Image (cartoon, rainbow, N blue to C red; front, side, top):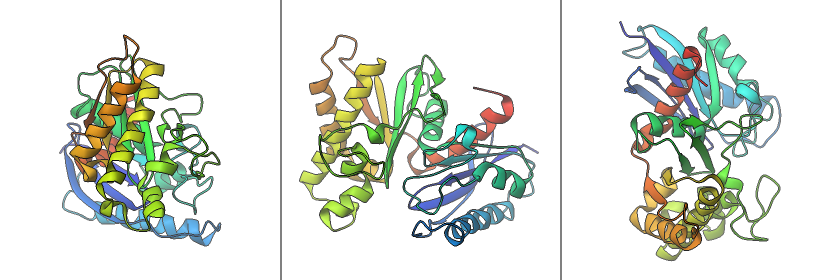
Amino acid sequence: MTDLALAVDIGGTKMAAALVDRSGDLRHRVQAPTPHTSGHAGADEEKLWQTVVQLVQEVRSGPDGRAPIAVCGVGCGGPMSPDGETVSPLNIAGWRGFPLRARLQELTAVPTFVDNDAKALALAEGWIGAGAGQANFIAMVVSTGIGGGLFVDGRPLGGRLGNAGHIGHVIVVPDGRPCACGGRGCLEAEASGTALAAIMGQPAEEAPPDVVERTGTLVGRAVASVVNLLDLPLAIVSGSVALGFGEPFFVAAQREVELRCGLDFARGAKIVPGALGDKGPLIGAGCVGWRGVDGSS
């Protein structure tokens, strides 16, 4: 019987779990809304944790739950401490310094590895998605929040504390809207699903064409900065906002990249939709687990 990875994806809108095999095949996916919390310690963090527990238990009691589970891999919003020992997702106010890795390892009784959810997506897209065969790219999630994961010279880029890739906090509107990070004019504060809902007074999926175009333009502006900085030819963009907005979003983003990338090495950089759709985050979480148990870096 094939060993499986228990994959857990934790975001500001929903939490999900599934089983992922060594080929990236996703089995028995379950999900639940992320509980609303006020940011108070104690009850809030346990309310969130119990949602994770329920999802894990549901997966393990499902049709493939009797198969050997070799590892647990997790993608979670950041920032976080090294190796995901503690997590403090900006879009989940109830977790500040929450010991996610240790709690999940105690729950599952298998080796557990945690990384940023957008970095997990980059692993998935580089493994079997739009980045397969590419040594240098950024993969992005434009959803409730905005995050990114970087591949440079064929390796995921971690940074000093493992938080490299936070493209959501590249400044795209000088002195723009205040951001949860404490800055102003960050991409996340201007173009995330949360920001769009606040700006429009209605859900992001109801955005009119001018808002879709502006959102794509701002994403393209941030991507151009990263392309110019790191010499990347490709940006892979997923998430409910980006994929929901569709072609007009990507046209606006590509136009902005072409406008802002004038250096010889940066010309021709492309923005493409993620190939894995809404499966990408969980496949990526599984990949976090497989890489951890295999000793990959």
